[in-house]
Amino acid sequence: MISNSIVTPVKALWNRFQVSSEQKKGNLQTFWLHQDSLPDFVHSSQPAMRFLDLLGPLFWSQIPERNLIRNWGQTTIPNTAFLAACLIKLEDGRDSMGDLLLYLEEHPALIWLLGFPRVPSTQYSFGFDPRASLPTERHMARMLRQTPNATFQSLLVSSVQLLFQEFARQGIPMNDCISVDTKHILAWVKENNPKAYVDNRFNKTQQPKGDPDCKLGCKRKHNKRVQQSDEPITPSTNPLPANGLQIGEFYWGYGSGVVVVKVPDQGEFVLAELTQSFNHSDLSYFFPLMEKTEQILGFKPRFGTFDAAFDAWYVYEYFHSDDDPQAFAAIPISEKGRYKTKGRNFDEEGLPLCAAGLSMPLLFTFTDRTSCLVEHERGKYGCPLFFPEPTGKSCPVHHKNNAKNKKGCTAMMPVSIGARLRYTLDRNSQIYKSMYRQRTAVERINSQAFQLGIERPHLRNGSAIANLNTLIYTLINLRLFHRLREQPCSAY
Image (cartoon, rainbow, N blue to C red):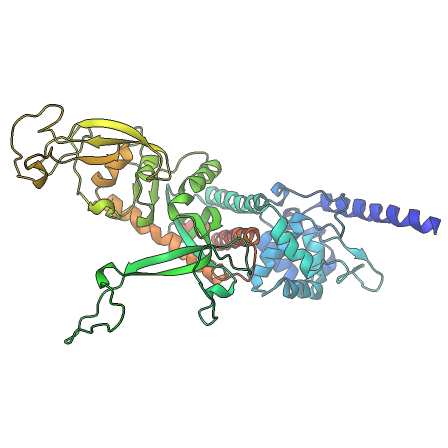
């Protein structure tokens, strides 16, 4: 009894030390670069060599590793082995972690290649027990929930760096235009099942029991119009005016925002991504995604293209630069405040023009903390016929606000140059159309992500869904890298 109590902890400590030592010998990238050093049973395994070619080019040494010596209460699985296994699950379309573990057990060469801690056994020619060397399905699911998203983000950044190296090797110029959009993700809860009876399905205060992190959001909303017919249909109960009735698509879930760069004639890749609950607006993704983009690129992109949901003055201001007057953000106007394109004109000093074409002087400014996500300075502009002093002249266009006991037209808007650019941007120019056409790149990324299961993940945790999204975008980048490798350099 005394010897067993001493030997068992020492043996466990030795096994952990042996595992950590084996991890230091190499990773997927070193195995990919030095394939002659691989054991024969790995060389002869077609799945192992296929996934080594897919995953090997990534910079696995840059992935933050957990403490492999610490006793976590179960077999310590390295982050690199776990991330690589999850990428294999996505690439092969495995439905669950159990299906993935069964596949790894059937191909022991993958267990050796990915770096799972191996349990020695003389019953197998390759020297370890495949089943005993793998964690449980619950353990793998727990790691997907509890591993910080920063670890997965480092893998995505590694794929971007890999693409940059390939661009430099093949002489592909880097595109200076980014595309940004969001993708809705449905939570795995009964509230999203239209066939399930749920009382108060879309009550945001009634959190679904199936997912404690998902939130209620609206994907799109539009007016319900009366159908034209020969005989008008009059409702017999609860009549509602059709012009004020709005319907929308509501879901419990999450949203994924991505920054995409197009590679001419080859495809597109994900530069940065962020996952939030579905109650966040599209504009809330802008600044976090731009911060990540600048960290990866080392500079601000010159051009950006967005849909109308990102029509905000600070988006235009972000891309504006006095040193680079050609840089701009290509965004269709959303006609907020009933103003259409060219609905507001400005003079050379940046003052808005009234309906009569007169420059409206600035009356006062104040700090706006409520009407926008960004705290900003807002100004009120008045009619030049009354401010700063009444001139006694009548309005040239006889505007209704210039009638008796009124003081003419006023305008309220941010004093930022982005507010002016929103109206003065020439959306009929060729450069605007050329940049806005690149927004289709983000739609193609969303389509690829949809095929990989991003829209309806069978997960019930926000951190797990965020980590899965990062893996999906990493795999999309890897697929582009291998398409580029298969092309001859002369094609560019």
